[in-house]
Image (tube, rainbow, N blue to C red; front, side):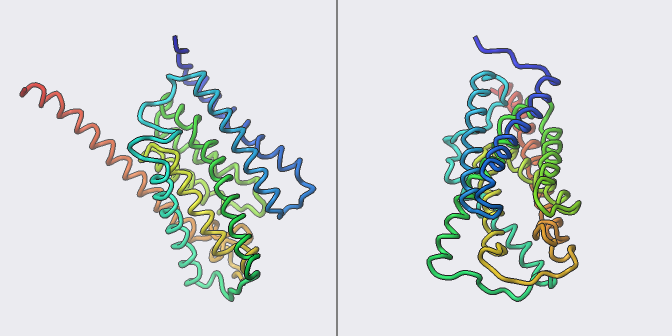
Length: 288
């Protein structure tokens, strides 16, 4: 016999507890490996792997403990109608295109200038590979933390819009743990949280959300990482995003907010079509 689904308050507290526990999976190893240095790729990738494995275990335990809690049709594992590779690829290309639009806008407005390669040859290729691996690990951990079990449990119990907006805000506020954060950066990341949340609601597969996250972050690293490039930034943070990065620029906020709005409209349209199809079924049955 399956366990009964817990109530609204219990699930809400469970969502917050899940996120807090998952953050500890990230922060504790980060502090434990501090001897490797702030900018160590080994440190970043090791913490990414540890935190992802731990949040995956926690997710598996909760899926087994509350098998009836998640809404039908959503996938935290590969689905026959949307294979992981296809969903990830679509998300990756979408995320890459969005950040490329941000980058182009900032460059045109003069927020960044004077680019030159900081490293060359084999060192460049090795660094890019390490950055990609670390980006996948970190993005997957973040998505299982914010769009995984707690998100889907929230969809079932408190409703899709409440959980999408609420977890989006939490997602943004958690980024105050990042160095050089600003209010503009938090606003931008909140918008990114809403974008990822509604992408999850539209495609119902975490592979798309992970791909979108990886595509944005990896393209950001490829175009602006100071491991790879030397460049100048405008002192006006609305143009360049300041020390936080292009996400905190005016262009970054606008592009992310518009993309989130598009995903919201896409989801609303899919829901209208679903209701319309359900309404037509009884009529077709009566005709038969």
